Amino acid sequence: MDLTPVNYDISQIAAILKNVEDLLFPTSKRDRPLVTYNIEEGSVRHIFKTSI
Image 1 (cartoon, rainbow, N blue to C red):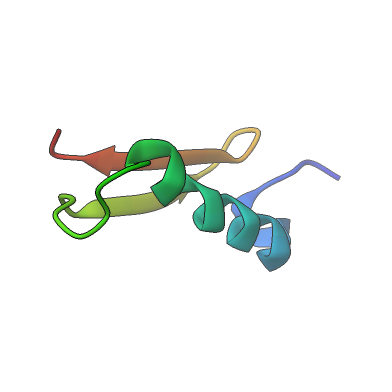
Image 2: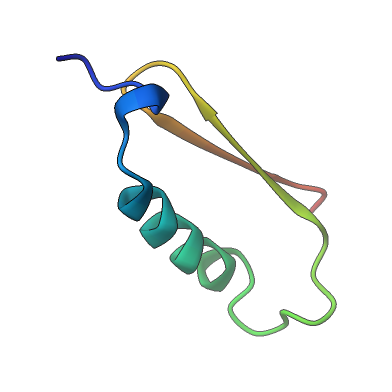
């Protein structure tokens, strides 16, 4: 079965979300810009966008 956002397990998404803020903003989380998230078709692509 091909991997898609429809059959991608929520625990995998949670693990990525848990770590992304630390990767993008290791020192200053209080004053960080808004970060958005989108899952797209493909090999499951996690797209994070920020205004930096």
